[in-house]
Image 1 (cartoon, rainbow, N blue to C red):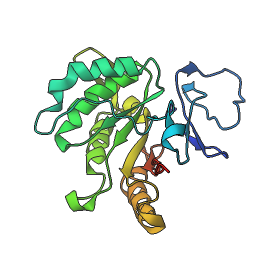
Image 2 (tube, one colour):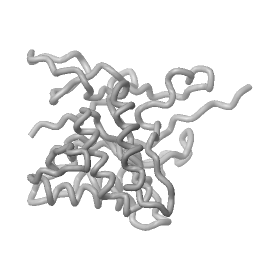
Image 3 (cartoon, one colour):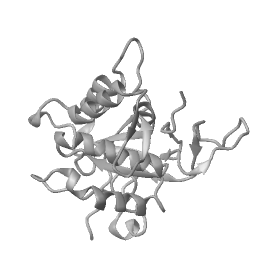
Length: 228
């Protein structure tokens, strides 16, 4: 099964991502791109931006949270609004971020993922590494477990968008693991964050298979410089 969510870290500090343009039939792809269902020439710069430099660049694919939600209110009550926002974003973005703020968001997030799949948008899920509130990555783990159990089933949302659980898994580009400003955790802290993510999510095995291996971890180290 091909995944449309493969990424490679490019030499110049860029993330090459799959996107909306049809993949070419020829065997050779441009440097920095990988075979998948689709291919794109967009990228996310990895560097530190001043407020002036950031105009027109930020928000970027791994930071822009457009989802409507409110603590204490079921996420499904904002379903129509979130579908509207996803559809708008699909006109300019090759990927979209969905925020797993609460564990009870799981089923509605899957409904929104189905809309993203219809729009051929890659998905970035947000589940911060925070041991103070329980085991890390349990929210994204719960979504992946449900999708894996239903990997061969055709899922649908209120709009009639459909995909199998396996197709949604393969449409996940990355999980945003946290945001501590510029190098806030230090090397040891970031090592723990990524090691836990690889152990709990990417390297999880089912019958000798690792169906989540393509999902990359992303810890936001991009912040604004102080103004002079």
